[in-house]
Each structure stands twice: as C-alpha cells, then as structure tokens.
Length: 270
Image (cartoon, rainbow, N blue to C red; front, side, top):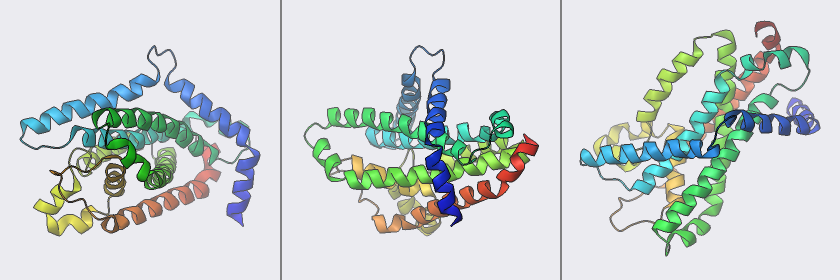
C-alpha cells in the first residue's frame, strides 16, 4: 500500500522529475564546449590506456571488451559521484518544498541513464565498424538481454545512489570512504579482464567473486554486444551470474528502503 502511494505521488510529480533530470544534464555540461563528449572521452581514454598496459604485461584482451567494461563502470561511477552529495546539495529544496524525496535519486538515475544510452549508441557504432559482418545481427539477437541488464543495472545504481546519499547526510566523511571503496571495487570487478581469468587462476574464490554485481552486469553486456571469436575463452554460463543479480536486487531494495526510512530527518540535518 505504501509503495503504491509513493508511485502515485511520483506520477503526480512527473513534471518535477522531468525538470530535475533536465537540470542535472545541464549542470553536468554547463560552460563545457564539448558537452557530452567529455563523458565519452574519459572512458575511451581509460580503455585505451588500460588496453596498452595489459598488452605490455602480456595479458591479451579484446579492446572492445575493455570498452564495454569501462563504459558500464562509468555508468555506476557517475551515479555514485552525483549521488553522494545529492541530499546535501538540494538542502534548500528539501527544507522549503514538500515532494517525495525519492524523486531526487530518480532524477539522478534518469540523467545518468540518458548519458549511458548515448554511450551505448556510440559503443554499438564502434563495435559495428570493427565487425560489420557479425556485430549488427549479434546485437539485435541479444537485444532483449541487453535491455534487461540495463534496467537491472539502473535499479542497482538507484539503490547505490540512495545508500551514499543517505550515509553522507549522517556521516560527512562518506565521500572519502566511497572513493577508497570504489577504487578497490574497480580492481575486484572484471572491467579490464574477463571473469574466466578468475576462474582459471582462483577457482575456489569464483563463487565469492560472482557475488559482485558488476561481474554479472559485465558478463551479460559482453555476451550481448560481442560476437564470439574462435580465440575467446568459453564464456561463463549465465546461470553462474545469478548470484550477482540477486545481490544487485538486494542492494537496490536495501538502499531505497534506507532512504525512505531516513528521509524524515533530512530537513533537520542539511
């Protein structure tokens, strides 16, 4: 019943939600000459540098697989970066206007999913240009899985936004802690390497490793976007990625629930 009431309020405030999404997009590219392309250039540069570094170490991985990893990682990092100070930066709005506070995380997630879709469009173009014969048909065939994982990824990111935004209201060192944790999380996620590498070298750790939601997301993104090559390792069966998706749902629900419980204190603390 409470969930239905919140949904009705969000629908009634959809104009406000749209305005906040537009505002978030404008703030990101305010006074920027290249605008959206800065969001695109950063992951492309990261992927190029890491691809070169891995080749120097003798670790081969398809550069387009690295592109996918960095783009998906960037989506989550943009949500975390925008979400950390979300409540504090909107303190005046929270104190003066009544509205469902969940609109703030929804607006942040909405702005970033628009960015991510633009990034996926560019990524799809890159993949088609690199493999014009196989990539278009492969992507179209796997489009339902791709759209499904994007929706789950957005839901997970919404939970993360709620978690860090709430934590930062009560503990202002959250931003610094999040920076340290996300750095560790990056190296513990298959952004620059395949899950199969973990399976080959640390098989006993694989069940724990696959609890990482990013392992599941990246596994499906790569399977959906990349036509397999004869030289590729055998892909991790999707059933092994189910724990990742279960953790992602739990994090999302937990973050949203925490935000809803603690929002009554926001106006007094920001």
